[in-house]
Figure: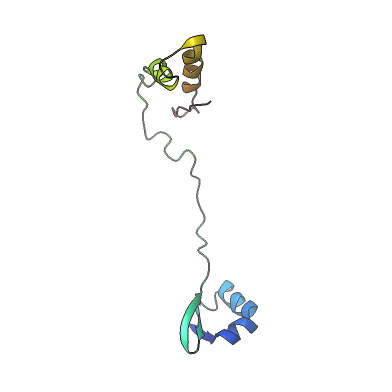
Length: 106
């Protein structure tokens, strides 16, 4: 661990960052008036893996998942189904992405 004062850090920031990037230093402490005030450390470079579809095959959707769609659609419409709004909403509720995940599309 290298320690530098504020003036040194300001005048040689690119050199300090390069030392961190290349792994020559794991941490550089920056001090003001002899007291540590900041640390220069490498960013976490852990790569984020694929997240979409990570639960595929781990859950089974019941065959009755769409049983209450008409009732739910009526409740969204305030219980008044003039003009077939519940059926239109019901068709939106039934869309899925192939994994059994229902989407409500307005």
